[in-house]
Image (tube, rainbow, N blue to C red; front, side, top):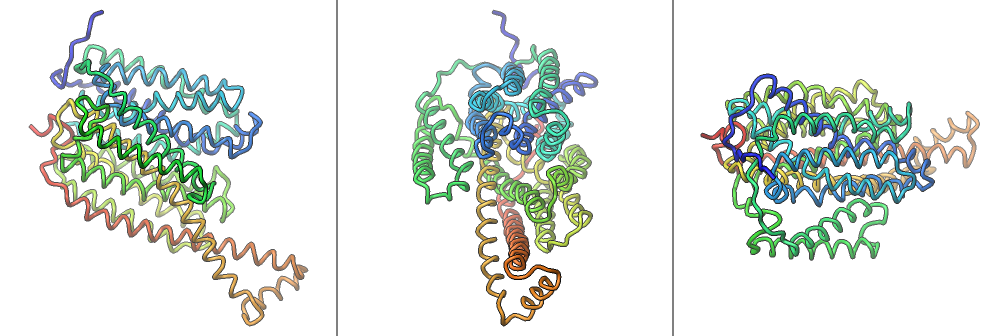
Amino acid sequence: MHQPAANDGRAPPLHGGMLALLTVAIAFSTFMEVLDITIVNVSVPAIAGSLGVSPSEGTWAISSYSLASAIMQPLTGWIARRFGEVRTFCASVSLFVVFSMLCGLAASMPMLVVFRLLQGAVSGPMVPLSMTLLLANYPNEKKGLALGLWAMTVVVAPIFGPIIGGWLTDNYSWPWIFYINAPVGALAALITWTLLRRRESAIARQPLDVVGLALLVIGVGCLQFMLDNGSDKDWFSSPLITVLGIVALVSLTFFVGWTLTERHPVVDLTLFRHRNFAVGVLALALGMFGFFGINVVYPLWLQTTLGYTSTWAGLATAPVGILAVVFSPLVGRNLHRLELRLVASIAFVVFALTAFWFARFTTDAAYADLVVPRVIQGIGIACFFIPVNQIILSGLGPAEIASASGLSNFFRTIAGSVSTAATVTLWQHRSDYHHAVLAEHVNAASPAATGFLDRLAALGAHGLPGYGVVEQVLTRQALTLAVNDVFWLFGAIFLAIIGVLWLARPPFGSAGPGALH
């Protein structure tokens, strides 16, 4: 069979209409994949009801996807070297469409879980390779713009997922959250293959590291399962969670040792010998921990405490994408002129200030008040993802970009999973604490408490009904005080990350290999 000529970074960049078409195709495929991480979240009750299972069992539609995707992301480099970056990307997008359709057609929960598992597995290389292909085919002077457009789609897609998922579920039915992937993915794969099939990367027939792969699958699988289910099972008070934690720790420890001594490792951990890669990945993971945590607890607080519907919680969350869409291309286009550590530091200052802003909100906060800091956060998004990803890629060769992108996206994904688990647990524990403190003041010696109960009695709420109202008030206030604590913590984390950023050392180039020369 004829092999396309390998470009290995030597093919001339695309220009004009072909470059624009490639950008749209890759952006839509990336948007589609990242969207699917969150689009299912709001549809879990509908899915569970339709397939005759409990809502907790319905969350397996989310867990199975994230589990498989997290395992496959760090394997991106090996798969791309073995089969070629273009082939791997187009095959991933095509298979993603197939399994999306099968998810929509699933007639039982086990079927849906299996198809979501397969959908997550084939999605693993999509986001890392989307950045790799853009950087490989953009002119050097426009690589920063490519990085900006990529960051914009990766960051904005999860924000719009709940809104689109809720709208499709309410107006049509839950299978449509999967069916909409078919035309988008099919067209994206066709366009990408048409434009890039003769620009394939070099292929290396290296053997498969079976031991390393097994350790990775077991370690990451147990870690992701533990994070997805730890909160529901009260963490390490559960024997299952304890066993999963131990197996994950042992497997990943052996994986690191094995991979560093293996001649043909399935994951290239030697990338961490590059100072900027190690610093950039650490900053990205810590930044995602805080950013993702805010995006988890904020809509939860709106729905459980302020009485927002899923749709309105989504509309209160989504404005963060407005300025992100505006500023991402601007930052990317001027990346070569900017001090990347300073730009990223500005991002974390913005994140910290808006987190402290949120930490001052009460249960009386109006929608308009809540939206303003979310809009401002969008500036931080543009100043965070693009410079940090460029720091990660600086100094790497063309053959290392796929592996570097896969590894960095893996840590981004795991940081999000850890953040979700830790944030929800912290919120619950702080809520219990504040509830206990507030309840101490509800006694006969408290004028405020007795006055409130007297007013309730005057309205007809005597005895237990009155205390029921007091309990509701205490719960709302405790949840709000707890979410304020979480925001204060994230604000402090964002400020601490600034110190990490300045451990990176220039030159950083403008975006990716080739731009440094």
